[in-house]
Length: 341
Ligand SMILES: Nc1ncnc2c1ncn2[C@@H]1O[C@H](COP(=O)(O)OP(=O)(O)OP(=O)(O)O)[C@@H](O)[C@H]1O
Ligand SMILES: [Mg+2]
Image (cartoon, rainbow, N blue to C red; front, side, top):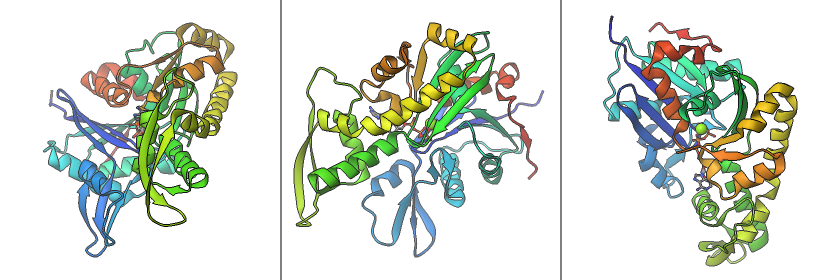
């Protein structure tokens, strides 16, 4: 039998991860591209480009080619992926197959865009796996059993929730409220209430340092700097956990409402399984303090944050490719595309 090379990719709004069969995760980098507008050339990708994000000179633009989990700038996404692959010297050949994790509920156009992207960077065959399935599989849930699991993947651009049973998604919902949305709420509130202009990196720092979904028993505080809106000069302020919690109430409510809708649309038998098995939380957003407790209180079902929530989608996709023939039924909901070059 001819040895097939299989490369797995989790193209996230915030982070791109690449898993190489037999090796593991070889790329784990911010999904960011910095390019020079004068020369129209990419100057950096990944971590290097992230450092430039808020501090680029006028002729350099740093952007994220993915938005809410889908490709927003096709050319930049291709440049980014190509550079990651080249840098790791990932061995492409005409036999290379790819397994790419994608959000649920994609439109045909969005899905086709992922397939075209991989084709343009050189893949021979493109298989797609839905991210909640990959996350559940990566977290070693028994998704092939006749029982149901509810898994929530809260990333940067979207929160994807799905009820999974017998290797497939029974019902799912995706909403564009996730980590980035939280950051934007923090930026808005700091501007409106505290009259200070801050950027995305500072908002993210605030969220991670003092953000929480429910009171956590310890008081947290962080000092940040920004531009005073009236004087235009630098100013330092201190922000408390209570303030951030208040600012996050509205977006968290939106997520809980959609989650309740999802449970309502699930078949009654499966709701019983979910009650028994609990809700599984993954993605970077699941690391927000007390989010598991909030969901548990609102839905009335135990909530567990999976182990290593930031890499479970890439690891799950990798586990499929390590034993491709055995697990290919996890991909069966999608047309696997034969790409001719
Ligand atoms: N400790 C933390 N507390 C709160 N949020 C966190 C924490 N760590 C990471 N995050 C958030 O998790 C998000 C990134 O998660 P993840 O890497 O799963 O996203 P992604 O897969 O790139 O995005 P998507 O799946 O939406 O396309 C960011 O918004 C980040 O702010
Ligand atoms: Mg993700």
